[in-house]
Length: 247
Ligand code: PGA
Image (cartoon, rainbow, N blue to C red; front, top):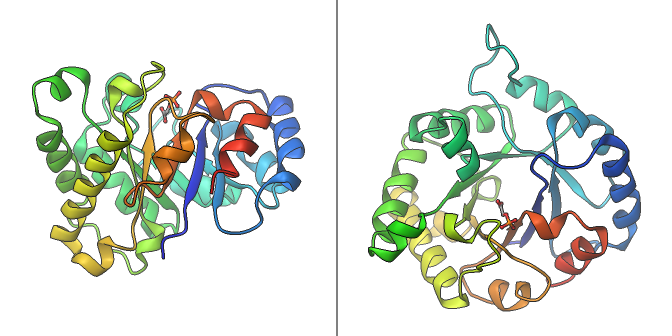
């Protein structure tokens, strides 16, 4: 049985005070079991949130792939580990698009996260042109194979993949339940090709892209959709609670 995940991706939103307020507001209202409820917050406030979090779990949005050194402005895996976070988003399409996070970097980050006992939430997904020209599977195949090249792990529950079609992110244009299931199922098949069916069956695969309180139930009811990675709709405390209660 895969334990579902509802992960909020706050992106570059919320000051420290706003974030602490959010945690205090939601924490005792979340389901205590049956779903992992996570917020991926800006790095500068992670420690403050971890200290106050009880039911809710905290993740980071990015991490450098090197141990330490001359990388001005970057956050090392050890620094993240030190804040107490358990998860880190890797390869979000915004980082791929704006910060040159290519497949090789994504691959290195996954390996480094696992080395430091951080659970990577690995984002993959096609853009609108790729979807419209029938290249969705090619893009997923290439991204998954490159991301997981040489990646080894003992517990598949520590590896999470998020299918995030770029055309659905922040656009209000959600994938249909059929599109989400088709892509997540295909990702599981790709993972089975690398790690075998038994392992792939234990890896959690999320859908992300304009998920909200109205569409969450139908999306997560799909057999291969094990939860959601939610941006905009995760910023409001009541919405976040409602999203977590969909499981
Ligand atoms: P969205 O973002 O829910 O605002 O579309 C999702 C994401 O980027 O992870």
